[in-house]
Image 1 (spheres, rainbow, N blue to C red):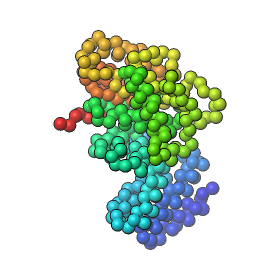
Image 2 (image 1 turned 180 degrees about the vertical axis):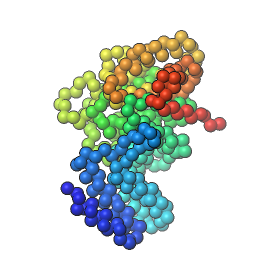
Image 3 (image 1 turned 180 degrees about the horizontal axis):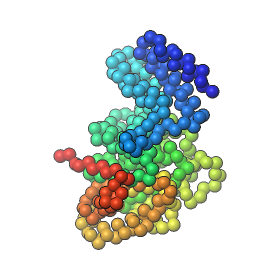
Length: 335
């Protein structure tokens, strides 16, 4: 359907033109290619295991090139406000497009228009850019396991929450679970946190995922449903179920997309009690992990307090039993 537009733009791009015009033509080409790829059901992003990297469709490749080039041109033309406004609009379009498929771009796009003092990613880019890229690859792996160990107060929970919002936007029809050591944390940080990201002050989430709608929420069961599969009635398998490890998980929804676990251990005092750690590990392997269904991925985020906590034990288990399946990230505190 878009063959003529694509062909014409390809021919035009062979001609000599200034950088701004080339940017505009490339942006149009990216747009028509994305529509063509959608109609032909072309996979836009896939994980290549032997290279531990991602393979992109042409529209994604062009959008990445555009985003990089636009940043350079904007920096070189800071005084030309009309041009900057025009280029920034194109930059946003490409980040919103890439944010739908790549979490590292989603993380940036979610902060468009937000004043610097309120931005989460900007002051942490030197560390979180790497984490966000690894999370992007993780999303496209099959039945993958990933652990992220970071000190308390360094942004690991906020990063995990944003990643789960990205996963929900990508496939709202697949159930997910988010679990922490207490129900109050699950409610405040996960349930309310995902709602806040959906209704973010600049509307960035809905610009990235315009078709994703919040159709049901329950503060009592900590459930959110964003399904767009034409099912009229809600059911037990919501898009997201949040839970505290201190409550009952048995009989709750299962995770078909991602089981996200954040800080099963409250603090170093609890971690020092081996009996408590043994009990948590038993509950984790015997109850929580069994919530995973199909091709579900496991993401465990937290602070390592001891060799007996569930995060340490999970790392040791997969390093021994299935090392190809796990990605381990450990970021120490910088003094």
